[in-house]
Image (spheres, rainbow, N blue to C red):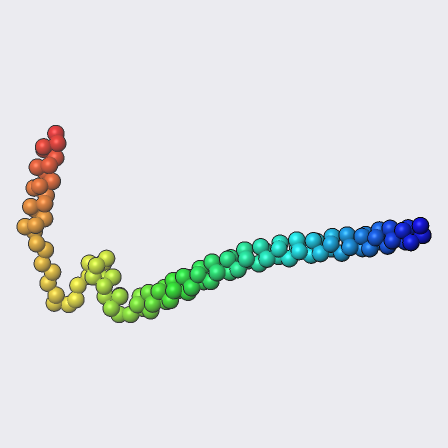
Length: 115
């Protein structure tokens, strides 16, 4: 009888230890899987941020080129001619009045037809 009781006690003791080891192992596996999920999410965010960084860097390069161009004499002349209507000395500007009057006539005709 003593042998049977020792065997039962040993099974209980070892069974409890095995249960504790399994619980710790399950806990560790759960946290490992959770960490893998978090890591994959962070890697996806990192990839998205790298794409955003490269886009912003190209935007910065384009803006720097625009700034350099805006400081050039070519740009200043273009703005002076197009937006301010300035001309060079002894330069004559010709306006084609025929096209303007023709489009004005068409607009007038369209308005008359609508009325």
